[in-house]
Amino acid sequence: MFASLSERLRGVLDQVRGRGRLTEENIEDAVRDVRRALIEADVALPVIRDFVARVRERAVGAEVLRSLTPGQAFIKILHEQLTATLGEGVAELNLRHQPPAVILLAGLQGAGKTTTAAKLAVYIRERLGKRAGLASTDTQRPAAMLQLERLAASIDVPYLGAEPGLGPLAIADQALKAARLAQLDVLILDTAGRSRLDSSLLDEVREMRERTAPIETLFVVDSMAGQDAVNAAQAFAAVLPLTGVILTKTDGDARGGAALSVKAVTGAPIKFLGTGEAVNELEPFHPDRMASRILGMGDVLGLVEEVQRKADHAAAAQLAEKISSGKQFDLNDLRAQLEQISGLGGVESMLGKLPLPAGMSAEKLAGQVDPRMLRRQIAIINSMTPRERRRPGLIDGSRRKRIAAGAGLPVQAVNQLLKQYTQMQKMMKKMGQGGLRRMLRGLPGFGR
Image 1 (cartoon, one colour):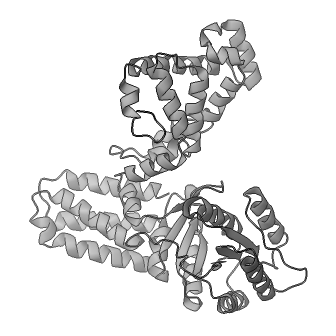
Image 2 (cartoon, one colour):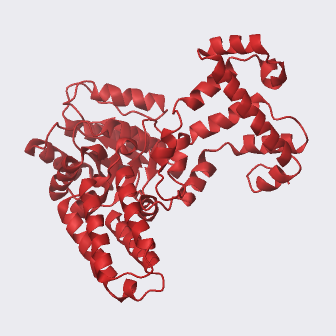
Image 3 (cartoon, rainbow, N blue to C red):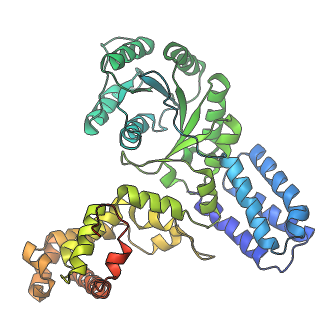
């Protein structure tokens, strides 16, 4: 997300940094380039006009021209204005309501409401420690209810079905009663979408909101829809008091115009980003961190939080103990490390949160790595016998051919993996002299 915008803005910042002092003319050139970058990112024109005007007002003033480090002062202004446009502060989910707190999801067809409903239920359970139930009021789309019911079963979340033939409002009433009986903390209502905006859709959602009194009314929008997404958000916000926005499919959106526009045109904060297809790929939106990532500063804090949440600390502690005690790092350990990286969203996801040098982006770096590489390497190790994984020195030419055939890959891939393993083994051996123990001492579960 924001790949093209980030690349353009970082180009502008490189030019600004390269000047010993900034003049009004220099600043005008930089502001003009910023405006062009925002247009190419498909940001709404009113948002661009406001953004550029605010940047120009602060940059042309004494704040930059009299600064000892004018380049850094300009970057600070750009960061602060991006943060303000994306929304100040983290807009947390509000569940302070007598159970069950109702969350109403609205949006156009194809925006990903049904999948987002399931993701939200997982988020509420895993991050907030509350029990959520799912219900679909979508009587328009064939199999919409069946889809949500299956998703609910796959994530072990209650699905509150309805009697056949009921209308959307009656279904919502039944679901609310069932949620109370089941003593659920939260009820997530998935509503019908349409391929385009029409009065019947808006009337239905508005009436459902009045009937169910949701604590949260969230607009689910496809970030890849660009200006269409912004127009839809604006239309819904005109008739519904939205409490927040969820941007979906952000992993496939390189421009990011919707994210930079939707807060300004709706007045509702972005609360979540859908970062992938898996049910655990829903992340709270941090405007300041996203602004840092756009400007190439990375989001190290976000990466640390993600590692703390998703990494297997017990496995890391066991590995540290193993290496510290002088035991050999084997292919079982390498497979565990590869699975950890895969669980963190892969190489590109991790690179996207790291500060990168000028002229380089996470997408460019990740583009040099085959996204299927991790899965292939894990498949190679899985094709080995338990003995071969414990004692890689046994793997001779004939064994390499057998392993390659088992993984459906050429022998060169096996050779490359074993070379990588040898390098990691040497590194682990060096760290075994107390280095790894010191590095992982702060992990939960690691004995002191």
